[in-house]
Image (cartoon, rainbow, N blue to C red; front, side):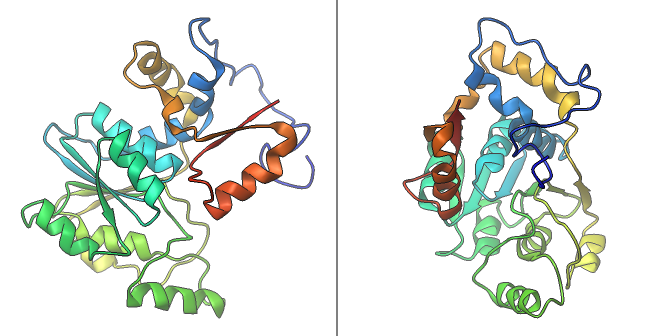
Length: 258
């Protein structure tokens, strides 16, 4: 509806509408369950794909809304340490304060070297690309990707994906919740093969996770409202989108209130 895919419209047709609804307990607020619709299950599935074992170290590229739930989910699943990689100060601060993550600013330090040091030279047990096709970077690979994009020789920028494969320990897992929509160049399949990495990715199976994640919320293991930085009336939706896109006013997640 409205000429756009998804739910950004005044009306949305929902086939098989009897499948999706979830009964919310009266004890929980709308805001506590709001993110069950997407970003919490997305983050949880990304972490679950890594088959996290007690004592594992998990590196997460990105510290946006999905990545924040990746961090929380990795700890729920037993990770010993989670390392968040981004360059936006308020997102790194949220990952550190709310997610208890060790944070790396890729604009200020060499990420593979830092990960190597933090893991005793082994590399993270799991690396999660929560950035996807619009990845930025400071190295030659990032410049290469931007040039290829500008010449329309590739559709996506796999800067983060390459770095995750480079950093991951032998026999580790690379999980990809970040969206890729087309073709990429210089994908290091040889490195992934040589290190015996497992790659897992795909659209999130949201319905599969609704009940177990609702239980986590009910039992107080996680309060998803930690992600909300702005609440705006629906009439100010355009301003909310602008704040988020431009990363202004320490914006991480906007909730629109009808």
